[in-house]
Length: 323
Image (tube, rainbow, N blue to C red; front, side):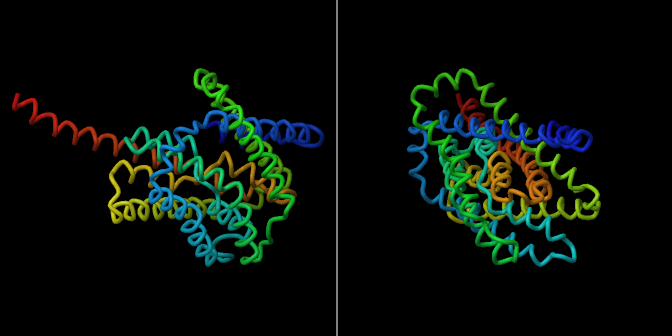
């Protein structure tokens, strides 16, 4: 609802002129603070505990950085008859982004999955994505005629995202406990920075006339593409987990970490990689997918939790009857 409110605000009162410049500077600072806090919160012991399940992590990374891009390239067959080129750039960008951290871990915990492995996979996906996403953008966009990514864009991501994260890791032993007692601070910075970026991106889109150029048919197509991506990846990750003999806890972790795409990392990366371009059209597929993954995976997490609770009840009931 807050995201929709930001889009509405940007449509009515878009940031322009000097205000847009100052707001952009404040947004960059908020993003850097966000990744600093992520680095300060991430427990090294938890990461080490989760790193041992290498098959699970390999499946998650393959889904995030191999399966998604392949599907994204295949969706290029819809251009330009069904999907406009500008929106396809956003779909392809969505497909090369890393997984989320907060929602992946939260849904895994709610569903009764392997939480330490989820922490490791989601966090590693974001760290690796800082390097791999710009490289995939350069490779795939060059192949599709969309241009590559510049060295300055990679440097910008390193300075804005990776450097604060490393700084947070360095002070993690001293700040982790305090941040654990003040989780509201991370939540405010997390959601606030995303909302700031969305407002700024769609302000630029409004000034450039995005909504006048985006017909209702294209929006419907984006929703269908998001539904196709999410359902396909969820089905493949669940089937692959069962085929490989993973436990249900590991299956839950693979499904959620493998299918999610990070809005917190994606929008800042888009601002750097596609600087000077139409950012609103590029992040729109990501925003739609992000909302869909939250709603669908929240429902899935409850179903997993209910199934686990029902099975435990069946196990304990005969024992109680026997006593």
